[in-house]
Length: 323
Image (cartoon, rainbow, N blue to C red):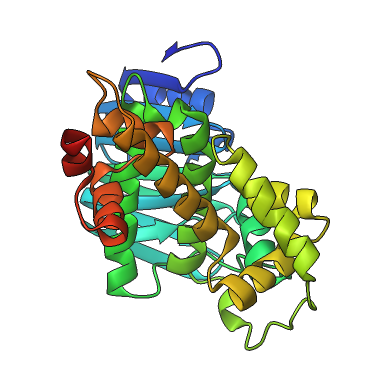
């Protein structure tokens, strides 16, 4: 295991043989694995796992076959199968995955695995974090938010989940990791939670109407804007902004949409983009676009560059060279 104090926890492990593999999986994951059936053979397992502030990502390469049952998983786990085949069974039936498929584990059921030689990436996030995202967006959290295990709602969403899985794994696996930047950590968790709600079937997709949370006065909105303007360099959340403004996160979302035609998160990103623009103009010798982008929470220089050019008519590098 490798990790810095308070930083990303990383672990790289290998096992040889079926018994050692099952023991290793039971040491790392909270859901106990029990062998079933007769389809077992010895082989190897290579596992790289990383966790930070509510988000985890694992890459697994396995050269063996076995059948097993696991206890219900406490967190939400979504698989992207890169190579091989994997059978997953729960109360809804058998799900046969082939290379390129994605799948969200059920959190309520015992899961049955029919594993063959394979390679996959698993992204993990807490149910409570995703429920908070659902509450913020829809104003309510259905009692059974994740009724069953499922595949993505469309091919496009499957492709999105593959890209997200690779991005999250590489971000957490890198040492040092940009995920340890205080502005990035919270956004990474929100990105994963929001993507799970968009990609995999859940009860929020059945909500035909979300009632308005009521009007928010202009004084409340001014407090929210002032809080963002004064704290854009800190890892603040929508809940933090709502608390400072004296309202709920849902009402704040509604007010920003109605009066500013954006969400609180979009307004925060706009402010950070403006601060990054100012830093590029005032940059001293040796400062780079990447360092300034990261300072304001932009982990992707490509995303930063596209939005910067749309806002200011030139690339960040051109601004840096000009000034």
